[in-house]
Length: 141
Ligand SMILES: [Zn+2]
Image (cartoon, rainbow, N blue to C red; front, side, top):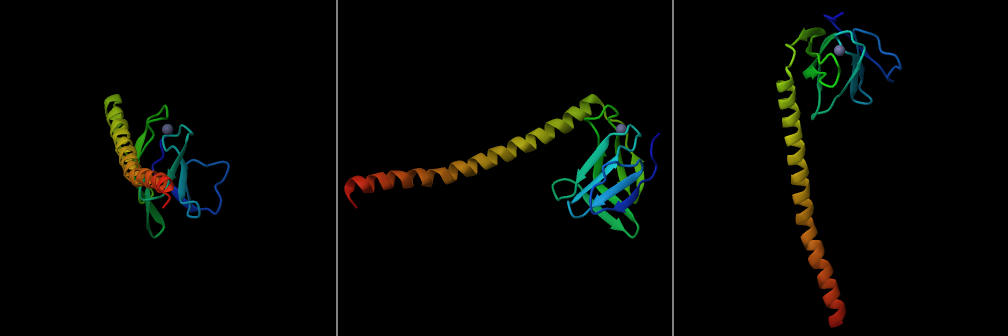
């Protein structure tokens, strides 16, 4: 059964068994967990950091953003948690999921390329430094 609301609970440690309709928030580990709101029982882990999800508190209610897209589950459910309400988003077609995965992959590739460029840039002075050390050795400097 699809959940319409979630109940946020602050926890110190992540419980072994999650209950349906509960959003477990663990500030210590900067993570939130809940069971998929479609009722399939899959556990949804949302790390809370600037690159992943952010949790907004409004008194007793919470919102998670961006939306939760469980593409890897059989249910492929997609919803928002806004002020404890589960706002269902239209199901995503294979094409849409593919697009999301591709843009994720492109972002990852861009990141790897940027890191490699940085490594290469740092590698050149290192290489010249080694050449210089060898040259100095032979010149007896
Ligand atoms: Zn589900």
